[in-house]
Length: 81
Image (cartoon, rainbow, N blue to C red; front, side):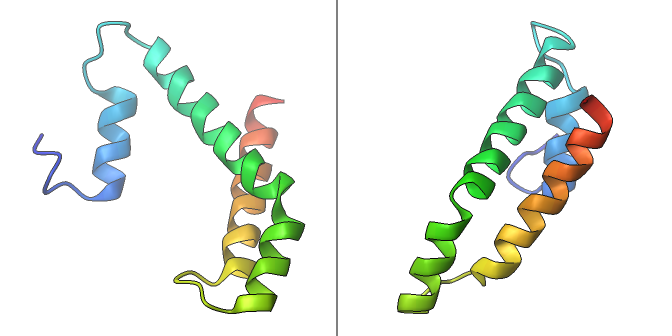
């Protein structure tokens, strides 16, 4: 797979299913990293929303970003908890 031209979905699928010298352990590393990143957003959402309201100078709509992170984390929690 050419990672430079692949879509985000193709790239993540390759991370999860492509060759890794550690086999399926790579899948758990990806899930762990994803969960930790989402938790970082959710745990800091009040500050992120405050900063967004005060400056409004963001490339991404932070309320939507936080809502998306919460939804994804909820789906992960439903599967793994």
